Length: 104
Image (tube, rainbow, N blue to C red; front, side):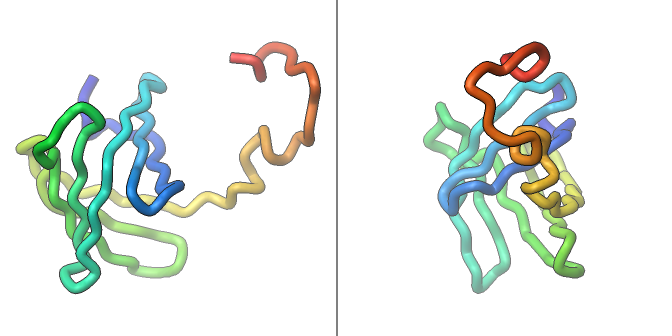
């Protein structure tokens, strides 16, 4: 599993980020932002030392770019905003019982 092989990145809370890898493994990171430098420091859930320092930019309202070093490797990550209402569990409505494949 390569830490840079992320399929999905979620910024749900200001102080944390989660990343889903290509094999659906989820990793959680604490985030510390420095708005003056447009940077974010990522710290793994079981670590006291930072895993990476990334500079972010917003080329437009739908994209976010992160560049810098993550776990001693240079990275360039391009993210595209996804409308939360498009997620299947948000669009299919409430169900008391979830049949396969929704219960996994």
